[in-house]
Picture 1 (cartoon, rainbow, N blue to C red):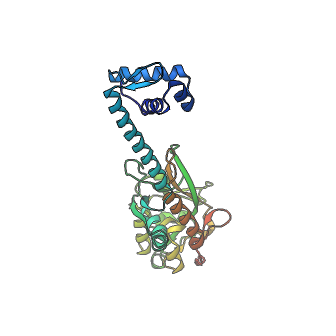
Picture 2 (picture 1 turned 90 degrees about the horizontal axis):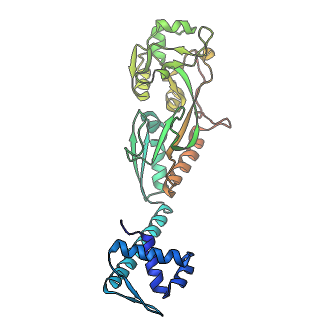
Picture 3 (picture 1 turned 90 degrees about the vertical axis):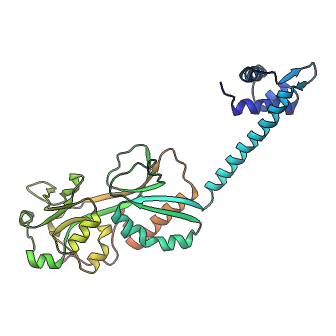
Length: 315
């Protein structure tokens, strides 16, 4: 059996206090329990650490060596604990953030110059993934996840909700025509996701239902790819507002079938492991992100992220 830090601390207390009784009082233990702990320690080490006299303890050579080493080890552990607590309270160190490519490009990246200016000692590592990742396996402190959360081992901080809407470029609509009803989509080129088929369930009234199951002619794993295809006039895509603000503001994309589109909100969360205590740098990043999303994107009282000065749908 291996010795423990508690046993080392008990041995140090006995020698410092000069008696089992006073050491037991200091450690808030019964004297009998402390005596058993000392006997167990000597059995583990297979040696005698001290000789008991009527008035005091006399250390053996092995006991003197063990006492010195125990003091060094306990001091090192206490110093490590203090430095770790101090580090957690400092706005410094590496912070690894993971997000889907569109959210990284359209929301996080535009904020990073200001974040670095405010927190120059935080070393940011930004990684993009269009699939849900394991935070520990990918050494990630914070992940931005869009949609319903299913992992109960995660803490989450909600950043807002993002609407979904059908969009196409004016060039595509000039060539293919404006759809006037959901059924007209069958004659159009639809753009959709290659993974998670539910992402191709568009929020449209169709045959008495509240969803239109699109059959994309062209699929991609990334929303950023679909955005580029839509702006290039390839077809119609259903995309979240947070990634289309600039395209709609400049009318590179316009909304299709707005009167048939139902309110469809996708929640956006920053997540981290439930067993992880938030360090100061994680808290600083989450507070900064939430504040600037409210400022730049505008989060309505309902929690919905809205683009500032976005153009109204036309057509």
